[in-house]
Each structure stands twice: as C-alpha cells, then as structure tokens.
Image (spheres, rainbow, N blue to C red):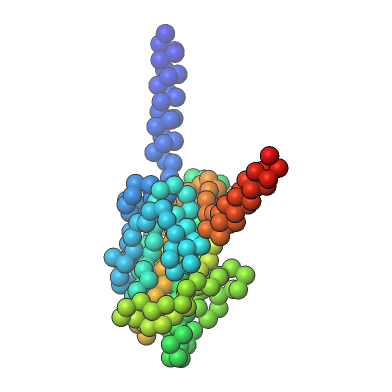
Length: 244
C-alpha cells in the first residue's frame, strides 16, 4: 500500500513539474474576447481591437476578419494619422516542436496624387524572435511599394472622412508553420506592427489569429464563391423541375 502511494506521489510531482514548465501562448485564438495575455504597444495602442465574425468592407467583403472561431485581433485601424500600433507576447521556456499562427494584412495605397517614398507608405510586419539567442525565426514585412501581386489583392477605392483618397490592398489569411525543435526551452516573442503612411492620410492594419502549437484552421469562404455555389444550386433545382 505504501509503495503504491509513493508511486502515485511521484507521478503527481512529475505531472505538476511538467505543467509548471510547459509554456505556450496565452489566449492565442483570442476566444476570451479580449487581449488577455497580450501587450498592446506602439504610439497608438488603442487603435487595435478584438473583432468578431464578419468580413472586411475595405476588401470588397472578400476577407473574413476571423480565421477561425468567434474572435481575432486587429492591430491598427483603417484611419490614417501617422499612427503606429503593435501587439506582442513573450513566452518563457517554449516547449513545443512547432509554432503556428495566421495573419492577414490590409494596407491603403495613396492615390491622391501626392508622391510618397517607400518609407512614407503604410506598412506592416509580423515577426517571431528567439530572445534566448537573439535570432529572428520569422519576418514578413511589406509596405505598399513592394506588395507581391501574387499575395495581395485590390480592395475598394475610397475616401475615409478626414483622410485622403486611397486604394485598399489586402492579403488572404497566411497560415504560418515553423519548426521550433531547435528552440525548445528558449524565450520567444511574437510582434505584429501596423503603420499608417507617415504623411498622415492613409491607413494600414493587420489581423492575427490561431497562435499556438497546432496548425491554424482557416475558414474563409469568399462571398463570390458562396454566390456561385448558390447559383449552381438554383440551376440544379431548375433542371430537376424540368426533368420531373
């Protein structure tokens, strides 16, 4: 009996010790409906917000604001004003063999006839840093001047009251999967930054979701696809009526 109790006690100690050492991202899918576990920063931290299920109007409603579930984070907002917003979280003692997350960016191209240098245009960056050995594990950074055509699409051309005319561009949700077997036990930091154009008239923002150690689930049916599916169903129904 005493031997069984000793074994049980040892198992409990191991389990508690493993749980205490285990480290991962807190609230990585934002399903708490808030920024619990995350740090909002930059000069304009309050531009960032938790968003719910729906589509982004600046993308012609082609981009879902949430990759999966009920909530995601938006870093920055659509208004200009030379604002810069960041969202970050540091994990001490990373324990998993991979890290996974998803992001989507929306940037406004200045089309008001005012020349902007690349450094003055709206931009964003998504970075994963290994703080333990001072290395960068992931860095995706773009401004309007160097958006890859294969990744970004044209959205709406509009004027937000109080700001300048611009053409919105957006990316689909990008699912990121990184092998972190060499980084187990290290301190990792994920940092997302969204910056308006420095002249103040155009905006940019980034969505983030599904941060953790399992592959992101991205449910983003495009409205156009759903419309085509609906039309196909209507057509099939009409054919069936004719046959019958």
